Image (cartoon, rainbow, N blue to C red; front, side, top):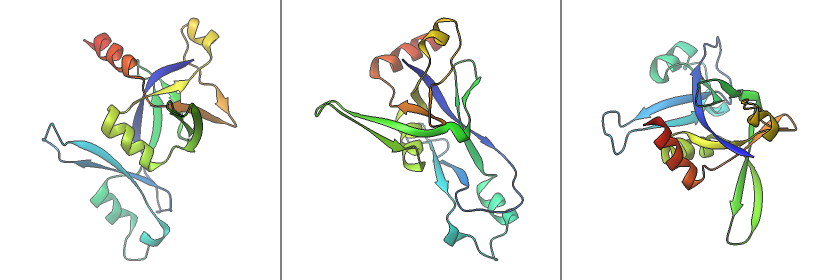
Length: 157
């Protein structure tokens, strides 16, 4: 069964820059219609002697790790467990798994306010626990269902 969770980012301090580090930009702050968060990945080509970690952190803030949190703010999945995203093509009745990368993170943050669904153990969920089912050490995620998004907003009010 799939349940709604929130994609959340936590900053950390690193002594050196490495390819694959994630950074977060706040774009268009103050503009309610356009404001959003954008994640970008540090590439090997962008790391050189002239860009020290201190300069990078001053310009972009500290690097971030992605987490999945439940509605109470508890960690459902750690960065190491985030990896597989289920794409369902309803028109052709097909499913495909893709790596959950920066493109998918940015889309979820922009279009769904960070909300998505994760596959959990149904028996544990009935007991009140959100325990994701891991496939090869990674959670299975998918887009938030339209009707579920409406239910979440009603619960918050």
